[in-house]
Length: 302
Length: 311
Image (cartoon, rainbow over all chains, first blue to last red; front, side):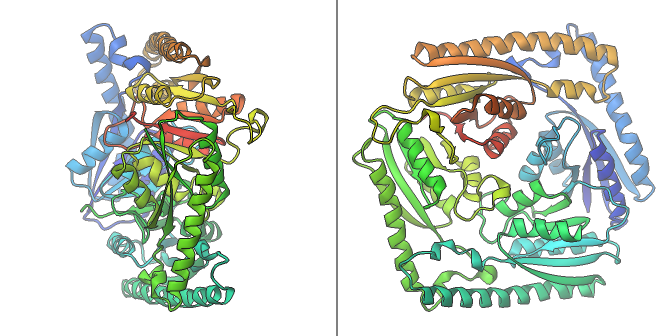
Protein backbone atom coordinates (compact mmCIF):
# COMPACT_ATOMS: atom_id res chain seq x y z
CA UNK A 1 0.00 0.00 0.00
CA UNK A 2 1.26 3.45 -0.95
CA UNK A 3 0.52 6.37 1.30
CA UNK A 4 1.03 10.05 0.66
CA UNK A 5 1.37 12.26 3.70
CA UNK A 6 0.97 16.00 3.20
CA UNK A 7 3.13 18.18 5.45
CA UNK A 8 2.96 21.98 5.79
CA UNK A 9 4.68 22.53 9.12
CA UNK A 10 1.44 23.30 10.96
CA UNK A 11 0.18 21.68 14.15
CA UNK A 12 -2.03 19.52 11.96
CA UNK A 13 0.97 18.04 10.15
CA UNK A 14 2.36 16.97 13.48
CA UNK A 15 -0.81 15.21 14.49
CA UNK A 16 -1.11 13.62 11.03
CA UNK A 17 2.35 12.16 11.49
CA UNK A 18 1.45 10.94 14.98
CA UNK A 19 -1.74 9.39 13.63
CA UNK A 20 0.14 7.57 10.91
CA UNK A 21 2.56 6.22 13.48
CA UNK A 22 -0.19 5.22 15.92
CA UNK A 23 -2.10 3.34 13.23
CA UNK A 24 0.73 0.75 13.18
CA UNK A 25 0.11 -0.13 9.56
CA UNK A 26 1.61 -3.22 7.92
CA UNK A 27 5.37 -2.87 7.57
CA UNK A 28 5.36 -3.23 3.79
CA UNK A 29 3.68 0.15 3.22
CA UNK A 30 5.50 2.96 1.47
CA UNK A 31 5.07 6.50 2.75
CA UNK A 32 5.79 9.47 0.52
CA UNK A 33 5.78 12.76 2.35
CA UNK A 34 5.04 15.84 0.31
CA UNK A 35 5.43 19.53 1.02
CA UNK A 36 4.08 22.00 -1.49
CA UNK A 37 5.68 25.42 -1.67
CA UNK A 38 2.52 27.36 -2.43
CA UNK A 39 2.28 29.60 -5.44
CA UNK A 40 -0.50 32.08 -4.99
CA UNK A 41 -2.12 34.46 -7.39
CA UNK A 42 -3.24 37.55 -5.62
CA UNK A 43 -5.67 40.15 -6.97
CA UNK A 44 -4.83 41.27 -10.44
CA UNK A 45 -2.92 38.08 -11.15
CA UNK A 46 0.12 39.29 -9.25
CA UNK A 47 2.43 36.53 -8.11
CA UNK A 48 5.52 36.73 -5.96
CA UNK A 49 7.49 36.38 -9.19
CA UNK A 50 6.10 39.69 -10.41
CA UNK A 51 7.49 41.38 -7.35
CA UNK A 52 10.92 39.80 -7.46
CA UNK A 53 12.86 42.02 -9.79
CA UNK A 54 15.74 39.84 -10.93
CA UNK A 55 16.01 36.25 -12.04
CA UNK A 56 18.76 35.91 -9.53
CA UNK A 57 16.58 36.99 -6.62
CA UNK A 58 13.94 34.57 -7.79
CA UNK A 59 16.39 31.69 -7.94
CA UNK A 60 17.70 32.56 -4.54
CA UNK A 61 14.26 32.62 -3.01
CA UNK A 62 13.24 29.42 -4.71
CA UNK A 63 16.30 27.67 -3.42
CA UNK A 64 15.67 29.05 0.03
CA UNK A 65 12.04 28.02 0.04
CA UNK A 66 12.89 24.56 -1.08
CA UNK A 67 15.53 24.18 1.59
CA UNK A 68 13.09 25.29 4.26
CA UNK A 69 10.44 22.99 2.87
CA UNK A 70 12.90 20.12 3.10
CA UNK A 71 13.59 21.08 6.70
CA UNK A 72 9.87 20.89 7.46
CA UNK A 73 9.95 17.29 6.35
CA UNK A 74 12.85 16.25 8.55
CA UNK A 75 11.14 15.77 11.89
CA UNK A 76 8.14 13.81 10.58
CA UNK A 77 10.52 11.82 8.39
CA UNK A 78 12.60 10.72 11.39
CA UNK A 79 9.50 9.97 13.40
CA UNK A 80 8.03 7.73 10.71
CA UNK A 81 11.32 6.16 9.86
CA UNK A 82 11.48 4.78 13.39
CA UNK A 83 8.28 2.83 12.67
CA UNK A 84 8.18 2.21 8.95
CA UNK A 85 10.90 1.08 6.59
CA UNK A 86 9.96 2.78 3.36
CA UNK A 87 9.67 6.51 3.81
CA UNK A 88 10.43 9.02 1.07
CA UNK A 89 9.85 12.72 0.74
CA UNK A 90 9.30 15.24 -2.01
CA UNK A 91 9.03 19.00 -2.37
CA UNK A 92 7.12 20.63 -5.19
CA UNK A 93 5.71 24.02 -6.11
CA UNK A 94 2.24 25.07 -7.14
CA UNK A 95 -1.31 25.20 -5.87
CA UNK A 96 -1.32 23.01 -2.80
CA UNK A 97 -4.45 20.89 -3.25
CA UNK A 98 -3.83 20.42 -6.95
CA UNK A 99 -0.25 19.30 -6.39
CA UNK A 100 -1.16 16.85 -3.64
CA UNK A 101 -3.82 15.25 -5.82
CA UNK A 102 -1.58 15.19 -8.87
CA UNK A 103 1.47 13.72 -7.15
CA UNK A 104 -0.70 11.13 -5.41
CA UNK A 105 -1.90 10.05 -8.86
CA UNK A 106 1.62 9.96 -10.20
CA UNK A 107 2.92 7.67 -7.49
CA UNK A 108 -0.31 5.66 -7.62
CA UNK A 109 -1.05 6.27 -3.93
CA UNK A 110 -3.85 4.30 -2.27
CA UNK A 111 -4.24 6.75 0.56
CA UNK A 112 -3.64 10.46 1.15
CA UNK A 113 -3.18 11.49 4.78
CA UNK A 114 -3.52 15.17 5.66
CA UNK A 115 -4.59 17.49 8.47
CA UNK A 116 -8.19 18.69 8.38
CA UNK A 117 -6.75 22.19 8.41
CA UNK A 118 -3.48 23.70 7.33
CA UNK A 119 -1.17 26.49 8.32
CA UNK A 120 -3.20 29.22 6.66
CA UNK A 121 -6.70 28.30 7.74
CA UNK A 122 -9.09 30.32 9.76
CA UNK A 123 -10.33 28.81 13.00
CA UNK A 124 -13.83 29.70 11.99
CA UNK A 125 -14.32 26.85 9.54
CA UNK A 126 -14.01 23.22 10.58
CA UNK A 127 -12.38 22.12 7.34
CA UNK A 128 -9.45 23.84 5.65
CA UNK A 129 -9.66 24.68 1.96
CA UNK A 130 -6.86 22.36 0.90
CA UNK A 131 -8.39 19.48 2.86
CA UNK A 132 -11.78 20.33 1.43
CA UNK A 133 -10.49 20.07 -2.11
CA UNK A 134 -8.37 16.98 -1.56
CA UNK A 135 -11.16 15.03 0.12
CA UNK A 136 -13.49 15.83 -2.76
CA UNK A 137 -11.30 15.54 -5.81
CA UNK A 138 -8.63 12.99 -4.97
CA UNK A 139 -9.30 9.71 -6.68
CA UNK A 140 -8.03 7.55 -3.82
CA UNK A 141 -8.78 7.06 -0.12
CA UNK A 142 -8.29 10.11 2.07
CA UNK A 143 -7.61 10.26 5.80
CA UNK A 144 -8.45 13.64 7.32
CA UNK A 145 -6.66 13.94 10.64
CA UNK A 146 -8.05 15.98 13.50
CA UNK A 147 -6.34 14.42 16.51
CA UNK A 148 -3.04 12.63 17.00
CA UNK A 149 -3.88 9.82 19.42
CA UNK A 150 -1.33 7.52 21.08
CA UNK A 151 -3.47 4.48 20.59
CA UNK A 152 -6.42 3.51 18.43
CA UNK A 153 -9.00 2.31 20.91
CA UNK A 154 -12.12 2.60 18.86
CA UNK A 155 -12.95 2.83 15.19
CA UNK A 156 -16.37 3.64 13.77
CA UNK A 157 -17.28 2.00 10.52
CA UNK A 158 -20.38 3.56 8.99
CA UNK A 159 -22.31 1.23 6.77
CA UNK A 160 -25.42 1.43 4.63
CA UNK A 161 -25.07 -1.90 2.89
CA UNK A 162 -23.98 -0.31 -0.37
CA UNK A 163 -20.93 -1.37 -2.35
CA UNK A 164 -19.23 1.78 -1.06
CA UNK A 165 -19.49 0.69 2.55
CA UNK A 166 -18.25 -2.77 1.61
CA UNK A 167 -15.19 -1.11 0.12
CA UNK A 168 -14.75 0.95 3.29
CA UNK A 169 -14.81 -2.27 5.34
CA UNK A 170 -12.25 -3.85 3.00
CA UNK A 171 -9.99 -0.83 3.36
CA UNK A 172 -10.18 -0.93 7.13
CA UNK A 173 -9.34 -4.65 7.13
CA UNK A 174 -6.43 -4.03 4.79
CA UNK A 175 -5.03 -1.36 7.08
CA UNK A 176 -4.78 -4.10 9.69
CA UNK A 177 -4.95 -1.86 12.76
CA UNK A 178 -3.67 -3.03 16.15
CA UNK A 179 -5.94 -5.84 17.31
CA UNK A 180 -6.76 -4.03 20.53
CA UNK A 181 -8.87 -1.61 18.52
CA UNK A 182 -12.61 -2.00 18.93
CA UNK A 183 -14.56 -1.78 15.71
CA UNK A 184 -18.07 -0.40 16.02
CA UNK A 185 -20.21 -0.86 12.93
CA UNK A 186 -22.93 1.77 12.65
CA UNK A 187 -25.89 2.10 10.42
CA UNK A 188 -28.76 4.58 10.40
CA UNK A 189 -32.29 3.48 9.58
CA UNK A 190 -33.91 6.09 7.42
CA UNK A 191 -37.47 4.92 7.52
CA UNK A 192 -38.85 7.49 9.90
CA UNK A 193 -37.59 10.35 7.75
CA UNK A 194 -40.15 9.71 5.02
CA UNK A 195 -41.70 13.15 5.00
CA UNK A 196 -43.21 12.65 1.58
CA UNK A 197 -45.76 10.49 3.26
CA UNK A 198 -47.01 13.26 5.48
CA UNK A 199 -49.89 13.98 3.23
CA UNK A 200 -53.56 14.09 4.07
CA UNK A 201 -54.37 12.11 1.00
CA UNK A 202 -53.24 8.81 2.43
CA UNK A 203 -55.14 7.51 5.39
CA UNK A 204 -53.27 7.52 8.67
CA UNK A 205 -53.69 3.80 8.81
CA UNK A 206 -52.00 3.11 5.48
CA UNK A 207 -49.26 5.54 6.39
CA UNK A 208 -48.60 3.85 9.68
CA UNK A 209 -48.73 0.42 8.14
CA UNK A 210 -46.17 1.29 5.46
CA UNK A 211 -43.85 2.92 7.95
CA UNK A 212 -43.99 -0.10 10.24
CA UNK A 213 -43.34 -2.49 7.38
CA UNK A 214 -40.57 -0.28 6.04
CA UNK A 215 -38.88 0.00 9.39
CA UNK A 216 -39.02 -3.76 9.95
CA UNK A 217 -37.63 -4.45 6.48
CA UNK A 218 -34.86 -1.90 6.96
CA UNK A 219 -33.93 -3.26 10.33
CA UNK A 220 -33.79 -6.79 8.96
CA UNK A 221 -31.62 -5.72 6.04
CA UNK A 222 -29.39 -3.71 8.37
CA UNK A 223 -28.86 -6.62 10.76
CA UNK A 224 -28.05 -8.88 7.88
CA UNK A 225 -25.39 -6.74 6.20
CA UNK A 226 -23.96 -5.56 9.51
CA UNK A 227 -23.56 -9.11 10.75
CA UNK A 228 -21.81 -10.06 7.55
CA UNK A 229 -19.31 -7.25 8.04
CA UNK A 230 -19.03 -8.04 11.74
CA UNK A 231 -18.00 -11.60 10.97
CA UNK A 232 -15.18 -10.40 8.73
CA UNK A 233 -13.77 -8.26 11.51
CA UNK A 234 -14.16 -11.00 14.09
CA UNK A 235 -12.30 -13.43 11.86
CA UNK A 236 -9.55 -10.82 11.58
CA UNK A 237 -9.38 -10.76 15.38
CA UNK A 238 -11.11 -7.49 16.28
CA UNK A 239 -13.51 -6.90 19.11
CA UNK A 240 -16.58 -5.86 17.11
CA UNK A 241 -19.93 -4.36 18.04
CA UNK A 242 -23.01 -3.16 16.19
CA UNK A 243 -25.00 0.03 16.64
CA UNK A 244 -28.27 0.64 14.85
CA UNK A 245 -29.21 4.31 14.76
CA UNK A 246 -32.21 5.99 13.24
CA UNK A 247 -32.33 9.30 11.35
CA UNK A 248 -30.26 11.40 8.95
CA UNK A 249 -27.04 9.33 8.74
CA UNK A 250 -24.44 12.12 9.00
CA UNK A 251 -26.12 13.66 12.01
CA UNK A 252 -26.52 10.28 13.69
CA UNK A 253 -22.92 9.24 13.05
CA UNK A 254 -21.58 12.53 14.41
CA UNK A 255 -23.74 12.32 17.52
CA UNK A 256 -22.72 8.72 18.12
CA UNK A 257 -19.08 9.79 17.74
CA UNK A 258 -19.53 12.49 20.35
CA UNK A 259 -20.72 9.83 22.75
CA UNK A 260 -18.00 7.24 22.24
CA UNK A 261 -15.07 9.40 21.02
CA UNK A 262 -13.63 7.09 18.36
CA UNK A 263 -10.12 7.81 17.13
CA UNK A 264 -11.31 7.23 13.60
CA UNK A 265 -14.54 7.27 11.60
CA UNK A 266 -14.43 5.23 8.40
CA UNK A 267 -17.02 5.58 5.64
CA UNK A 268 -17.49 5.34 1.90
CA UNK A 269 -17.22 8.45 -0.26
CA UNK A 270 -20.73 7.77 -1.47
CA UNK A 271 -23.80 6.12 -0.12
CA UNK A 272 -27.04 4.48 -1.16
CA UNK A 273 -28.76 7.67 -2.25
CA UNK A 274 -25.94 9.63 -3.77
CA UNK A 275 -25.80 10.64 -7.39
CA UNK A 276 -23.35 8.25 -9.06
CA UNK A 277 -21.49 10.97 -10.89
CA UNK A 278 -20.73 13.05 -7.79
CA UNK A 279 -17.20 12.57 -6.41
CA UNK A 280 -18.21 12.94 -2.77
CA UNK A 281 -21.64 12.07 -1.44
CA UNK A 282 -23.65 14.19 0.96
CA UNK A 283 -23.18 12.08 4.04
CA UNK A 284 -19.42 11.72 3.54
CA UNK A 285 -19.17 15.45 2.87
CA UNK A 286 -21.01 16.30 6.07
CA UNK A 287 -19.13 13.84 8.25
CA UNK A 288 -15.77 14.98 6.82
CA UNK A 289 -16.65 18.61 7.41
CA UNK A 290 -18.30 18.58 10.79
CA UNK A 291 -16.64 15.67 12.59
CA UNK A 292 -14.44 16.45 15.58
CA UNK A 293 -12.63 13.18 14.97
CA UNK A 294 -10.39 11.93 12.20
CA UNK A 295 -12.27 10.65 9.18
CA UNK A 296 -11.17 8.07 6.64
CA UNK A 297 -13.05 8.37 3.35
CA UNK A 298 -12.84 5.22 1.29
CA UNK A 299 -12.85 5.55 -2.45
CA UNK A 300 -11.82 3.11 -5.14
CA UNK A 301 -10.06 4.52 -8.13
CA UNK A 302 -12.29 3.25 -10.88
CA UNK B 1 -33.36 33.38 -20.41
CA UNK B 2 -34.88 30.43 -18.59
CA UNK B 3 -35.31 30.24 -14.86
CA UNK B 4 -35.97 27.07 -12.91
CA UNK B 5 -37.70 27.46 -9.56
CA UNK B 6 -37.43 24.31 -7.47
CA UNK B 7 -39.97 23.77 -4.70
CA UNK B 8 -40.46 21.02 -2.10
CA UNK B 9 -43.27 22.39 0.02
CA UNK B 10 -40.96 23.67 2.76
CA UNK B 11 -40.91 27.24 4.04
CA UNK B 12 -37.61 27.61 2.19
CA UNK B 13 -39.28 27.05 -1.14
CA UNK B 14 -41.96 29.60 -0.28
CA UNK B 15 -39.10 32.01 0.36
CA UNK B 16 -37.59 31.04 -3.00
CA UNK B 17 -40.89 31.78 -4.75
CA UNK B 18 -41.09 35.16 -3.00
CA UNK B 19 -37.52 35.92 -3.93
CA UNK B 20 -38.20 35.22 -7.58
CA UNK B 21 -41.16 37.61 -7.40
CA UNK B 22 -39.10 40.28 -5.70
CA UNK B 23 -36.43 40.07 -8.40
CA UNK B 24 -38.89 41.58 -10.89
CA UNK B 25 -37.13 40.03 -13.81
CA UNK B 26 -37.47 41.04 -17.40
CA UNK B 27 -40.72 39.93 -18.95
CA UNK B 28 -39.09 37.71 -21.55
CA UNK B 29 -37.57 35.52 -18.85
CA UNK B 30 -39.21 32.13 -19.07
CA UNK B 31 -40.08 30.50 -15.76
CA UNK B 32 -40.43 26.84 -14.93
CA UNK B 33 -41.57 25.56 -11.55
CA UNK B 34 -40.37 22.09 -10.71
CA UNK B 35 -40.67 19.62 -7.88
CA UNK B 36 -39.15 16.19 -7.53
CA UNK B 37 -40.87 13.46 -5.57
CA UNK B 38 -37.89 11.77 -3.96
CA UNK B 39 -37.51 8.08 -4.61
CA UNK B 40 -35.43 7.21 -1.64
CA UNK B 41 -33.51 3.95 -1.45
CA UNK B 42 -33.69 2.57 2.06
CA UNK B 43 -31.28 0.17 3.72
CA UNK B 44 -31.17 -3.13 1.92
CA UNK B 45 -32.05 -1.41 -1.34
CA UNK B 46 -35.71 -1.18 -0.36
CA UNK B 47 -37.90 1.36 -2.13
CA UNK B 48 -41.47 2.27 -1.29
CA UNK B 49 -42.64 0.52 -4.43
CA UNK B 50 -42.20 -2.79 -2.64
CA UNK B 51 -45.11 -2.22 -0.35
CA UNK B 52 -48.63 -3.33 -0.73
CA UNK B 53 -50.15 0.12 -0.35
CA UNK B 54 -47.61 1.68 -2.70
CA UNK B 55 -50.01 2.63 -5.52
CA UNK B 56 -52.16 4.66 -3.11
CA UNK B 57 -49.06 6.40 -1.80
CA UNK B 58 -47.80 7.11 -5.29
CA UNK B 59 -51.08 8.69 -6.29
CA UNK B 60 -51.15 10.81 -3.15
CA UNK B 61 -47.57 11.95 -3.69
CA UNK B 62 -48.18 12.82 -7.31
CA UNK B 63 -51.28 14.78 -6.33
CA UNK B 64 -49.41 16.63 -3.61
CA UNK B 65 -46.55 17.43 -5.97
CA UNK B 66 -48.89 18.88 -8.58
CA UNK B 67 -50.55 20.98 -5.90
CA UNK B 68 -47.14 22.25 -4.82
CA UNK B 69 -45.97 23.44 -8.23
CA UNK B 70 -49.36 24.94 -9.01
CA UNK B 71 -49.33 26.88 -5.78
CA UNK B 72 -45.99 28.45 -6.73
CA UNK B 73 -47.14 29.05 -10.31
CA UNK B 74 -50.17 30.85 -8.92
CA UNK B 75 -48.01 32.93 -6.60
CA UNK B 76 -46.01 33.97 -9.65
CA UNK B 77 -49.07 34.66 -11.80
CA UNK B 78 -49.14 38.41 -11.23
CA UNK B 79 -45.64 38.76 -12.63
CA UNK B 80 -45.87 35.98 -15.19
CA UNK B 81 -49.22 34.59 -16.32
CA UNK B 82 -47.76 31.56 -18.01
CA UNK B 83 -45.48 29.41 -15.96
CA UNK B 84 -44.60 25.89 -16.97
CA UNK B 85 -44.84 23.28 -14.19
CA UNK B 86 -42.87 20.07 -13.99
CA UNK B 87 -43.19 17.09 -11.64
CA UNK B 88 -40.45 14.47 -11.66
CA UNK B 89 -39.73 11.34 -9.66
CA UNK B 90 -36.28 10.25 -8.62
CA UNK B 91 -33.18 11.53 -6.88
CA UNK B 92 -33.96 15.26 -6.48
CA UNK B 93 -30.46 16.61 -7.15
CA UNK B 94 -30.03 14.36 -10.17
CA UNK B 95 -33.39 15.39 -11.65
CA UNK B 96 -32.76 19.10 -11.07
CA UNK B 97 -29.35 18.87 -12.73
CA UNK B 98 -30.81 16.96 -15.66
CA UNK B 99 -33.57 19.53 -16.16
CA UNK B 100 -31.04 22.37 -15.90
CA UNK B 101 -28.92 20.79 -18.59
CA UNK B 102 -31.55 19.60 -21.00
CA UNK B 103 -33.61 22.77 -20.82
CA UNK B 104 -30.64 25.21 -20.98
CA UNK B 105 -31.58 26.87 -17.71
CA UNK B 106 -29.62 30.04 -16.85
CA UNK B 107 -30.67 30.35 -13.23
CA UNK B 108 -31.82 27.78 -10.68
CA UNK B 109 -33.65 29.21 -7.67
CA UNK B 110 -34.20 26.94 -4.69
CA UNK B 111 -34.29 26.85 -0.91
CA UNK B 112 -30.93 26.53 0.84
CA UNK B 113 -32.43 23.70 2.81
CA UNK B 114 -35.19 21.24 2.23
CA UNK B 115 -37.78 19.46 4.26
CA UNK B 116 -35.59 16.80 5.79
CA UNK B 117 -32.23 18.44 6.32
CA UNK B 118 -30.90 18.67 9.86
CA UNK B 119 -30.17 22.23 10.98
CA UNK B 120 -26.50 21.98 11.98
CA UNK B 121 -25.35 21.39 8.41
CA UNK B 122 -26.75 24.75 7.28
CA UNK B 123 -27.12 23.63 3.72
CA UNK B 124 -29.46 20.97 2.43
CA UNK B 125 -28.07 17.96 0.66
CA UNK B 126 -29.93 18.71 -2.57
CA UNK B 127 -28.86 22.38 -2.52
CA UNK B 128 -25.30 21.30 -1.83
CA UNK B 129 -25.16 19.00 -4.84
CA UNK B 130 -26.97 21.37 -7.19
CA UNK B 131 -24.83 24.42 -6.38
CA UNK B 132 -21.70 22.38 -7.01
CA UNK B 133 -22.66 20.63 -10.19
CA UNK B 134 -25.13 22.83 -12.02
CA UNK B 135 -23.88 24.42 -15.22
CA UNK B 136 -26.09 27.42 -14.45
CA UNK B 137 -26.10 30.15 -11.84
CA UNK B 138 -27.75 28.98 -8.62
CA UNK B 139 -29.61 31.17 -6.15
CA UNK B 140 -29.96 29.48 -2.76
CA UNK B 141 -32.69 31.21 -0.82
CA UNK B 142 -32.87 31.45 2.94
CA UNK B 143 -36.04 32.37 4.70
CA UNK B 144 -35.05 35.80 5.89
CA UNK B 145 -34.16 36.79 2.40
CA UNK B 146 -35.79 40.03 1.46
CA UNK B 147 -35.56 41.82 4.76
CA UNK B 148 -38.87 42.82 6.23
CA UNK B 149 -38.20 46.51 6.55
CA UNK B 150 -37.61 46.85 2.86
CA UNK B 151 -40.40 44.58 1.69
CA UNK B 152 -43.51 46.24 0.39
CA UNK B 153 -46.94 44.66 0.78
CA UNK B 154 -47.58 41.71 -1.52
CA UNK B 155 -50.31 43.65 -3.34
CA UNK B 156 -47.86 46.37 -4.33
CA UNK B 157 -46.77 46.40 -7.95
CA UNK B 158 -43.46 48.03 -7.12
CA UNK B 159 -40.59 45.75 -6.28
CA UNK B 160 -39.02 45.69 -2.86
CA UNK B 161 -35.57 47.19 -2.76
CA UNK B 162 -33.09 44.39 -2.83
CA UNK B 163 -29.59 44.79 -1.49
CA UNK B 164 -26.88 42.72 -3.10
CA UNK B 165 -23.39 42.18 -1.73
CA UNK B 166 -21.29 41.37 -4.76
CA UNK B 167 -17.94 39.74 -4.09
CA UNK B 168 -15.30 40.26 -6.71
CA UNK B 169 -11.65 39.35 -7.10
CA UNK B 170 -10.99 40.34 -10.68
CA UNK B 171 -10.99 36.73 -11.85
CA UNK B 172 -12.97 35.76 -14.91
CA UNK B 173 -15.42 34.00 -12.65
CA UNK B 174 -16.35 37.22 -10.92
CA UNK B 175 -16.62 38.92 -14.31
CA UNK B 176 -19.07 36.22 -15.34
CA UNK B 177 -21.10 36.88 -12.20
CA UNK B 178 -21.17 40.62 -12.94
CA UNK B 179 -22.28 39.95 -16.51
CA UNK B 180 -24.90 37.55 -15.25
CA UNK B 181 -26.37 40.15 -12.88
CA UNK B 182 -26.32 42.88 -15.52
CA UNK B 183 -28.02 40.54 -17.93
CA UNK B 184 -30.83 39.51 -15.58
CA UNK B 185 -31.28 42.50 -15.04
CA UNK B 186 -32.15 43.26 -11.44
CA UNK B 187 -34.65 46.05 -10.68
CA UNK B 188 -32.97 49.44 -11.04
CA UNK B 189 -33.51 50.41 -7.41
CA UNK B 190 -31.36 47.45 -6.32
CA UNK B 191 -28.43 48.45 -4.16
CA UNK B 192 -25.17 46.83 -5.15
CA UNK B 193 -22.36 46.77 -2.61
CA UNK B 194 -19.13 45.57 -4.14
CA UNK B 195 -16.62 43.89 -1.89
CA UNK B 196 -13.05 42.96 -2.74
CA UNK B 197 -10.89 41.09 -0.25
CA UNK B 198 -7.14 41.52 -0.23
CA UNK B 199 -5.94 38.00 0.19
CA UNK B 200 -4.53 37.51 3.61
CA UNK B 201 -3.39 33.97 2.97
CA UNK B 202 -0.34 35.57 1.47
CA UNK B 203 0.51 36.80 4.93
CA UNK B 204 -0.16 33.39 6.32
CA UNK B 205 2.10 31.93 3.70
CA UNK B 206 4.77 34.39 4.71
CA UNK B 207 4.42 33.12 8.23
CA UNK B 208 5.22 29.60 7.16
CA UNK B 209 8.93 29.26 7.66
CA UNK B 210 9.91 29.14 4.02
CA UNK B 211 11.57 32.56 3.98
CA UNK B 212 13.67 34.57 6.41
CA UNK B 213 12.03 37.44 8.22
CA UNK B 214 13.47 40.43 6.36
CA UNK B 215 12.91 38.99 2.91
CA UNK B 216 9.40 38.18 4.04
CA UNK B 217 8.72 41.74 5.09
CA UNK B 218 10.10 43.29 1.92
CA UNK B 219 8.21 41.03 -0.44
CA UNK B 220 5.08 41.30 1.60
CA UNK B 221 5.15 45.11 1.58
CA UNK B 222 5.60 45.21 -2.19
CA UNK B 223 2.93 42.59 -2.75
CA UNK B 224 0.46 44.37 -0.55
CA UNK B 225 0.99 47.69 -2.26
CA UNK B 226 0.61 46.16 -5.72
CA UNK B 227 -2.40 44.17 -4.64
CA UNK B 228 -4.12 47.11 -3.04
CA UNK B 229 -3.76 49.18 -6.19
CA UNK B 230 -5.21 46.29 -8.19
CA UNK B 231 -8.06 45.85 -5.74
CA UNK B 232 -9.15 49.46 -6.14
CA UNK B 233 -8.96 49.12 -9.92
CA UNK B 234 -11.03 45.96 -9.94
CA UNK B 235 -13.63 47.37 -7.59
CA UNK B 236 -13.90 50.65 -9.49
CA UNK B 237 -14.34 48.82 -12.79
CA UNK B 238 -17.17 46.68 -11.50
CA UNK B 239 -18.79 49.60 -9.74
CA UNK B 240 -18.69 51.64 -12.92
CA UNK B 241 -20.47 48.94 -14.88
CA UNK B 242 -23.34 48.86 -12.42
CA UNK B 243 -23.54 52.63 -12.07
CA UNK B 244 -23.66 53.09 -15.82
CA UNK B 245 -26.58 50.72 -15.85
CA UNK B 246 -28.43 52.86 -13.36
CA UNK B 247 -27.89 51.00 -10.11
CA UNK B 248 -27.14 52.53 -6.76
CA UNK B 249 -23.70 51.28 -5.79
CA UNK B 250 -21.16 51.34 -3.00
CA UNK B 251 -17.88 49.55 -2.59
CA UNK B 252 -15.53 48.31 0.07
CA UNK B 253 -12.03 46.85 0.04
CA UNK B 254 -11.09 44.69 3.02
CA UNK B 255 -8.12 42.55 3.97
CA UNK B 256 -8.44 38.93 5.01
CA UNK B 257 -9.56 35.49 3.94
CA UNK B 258 -12.23 36.15 1.31
CA UNK B 259 -14.79 33.78 2.82
CA UNK B 260 -14.53 35.32 6.25
CA UNK B 261 -14.45 38.87 4.91
CA UNK B 262 -17.58 38.39 2.85
CA UNK B 263 -19.44 36.84 5.77
CA UNK B 264 -18.33 39.65 8.08
CA UNK B 265 -19.44 42.28 5.56
CA UNK B 266 -22.78 40.50 5.25
CA UNK B 267 -23.27 40.95 9.00
CA UNK B 268 -22.56 44.64 8.64
CA UNK B 269 -24.62 45.42 5.54
CA UNK B 270 -27.33 42.75 5.90
CA UNK B 271 -27.79 42.18 2.17
CA UNK B 272 -30.67 40.11 0.81
CA UNK B 273 -28.36 38.29 -1.55
CA UNK B 274 -24.62 37.68 -1.57
CA UNK B 275 -23.25 36.87 -5.00
CA UNK B 276 -20.00 35.01 -5.50
CA UNK B 277 -18.34 33.49 -8.53
CA UNK B 278 -18.34 29.71 -8.67
CA UNK B 279 -14.57 29.87 -8.38
CA UNK B 280 -12.04 32.56 -7.74
CA UNK B 281 -8.46 33.45 -8.41
CA UNK B 282 -7.01 30.27 -7.00
CA UNK B 283 -9.70 28.17 -8.64
CA UNK B 284 -8.67 25.13 -10.56
CA UNK B 285 -10.55 24.25 -13.72
CA UNK B 286 -11.40 20.70 -12.76
CA UNK B 287 -12.73 21.75 -9.35
CA UNK B 288 -16.37 22.65 -9.76
CA UNK B 289 -16.79 25.01 -6.87
CA UNK B 290 -14.22 27.14 -5.11
CA UNK B 291 -13.83 27.07 -1.36
CA UNK B 292 -14.94 30.69 -0.95
CA UNK B 293 -18.23 30.08 -2.76
CA UNK B 294 -18.73 26.92 -0.77
CA UNK B 295 -18.18 28.64 2.56
CA UNK B 296 -20.28 31.67 1.78
CA UNK B 297 -23.14 29.47 0.56
CA UNK B 298 -22.97 27.39 3.69
CA UNK B 299 -22.44 29.93 6.42
CA UNK B 300 -24.30 33.03 5.18
CA UNK B 301 -27.56 33.90 6.89
CA UNK B 302 -29.06 35.35 3.74
CA UNK B 303 -29.58 34.09 0.20
CA UNK B 304 -26.52 33.33 -1.90
CA UNK B 305 -26.15 33.45 -5.66
CA UNK B 306 -23.40 31.33 -7.18
CA UNK B 307 -22.68 33.05 -10.49
CA UNK B 308 -21.80 31.14 -13.61
CA UNK B 309 -21.42 32.33 -17.19
CA UNK B 310 -24.63 33.84 -18.60
CA UNK B 311 -26.37 31.80 -21.30
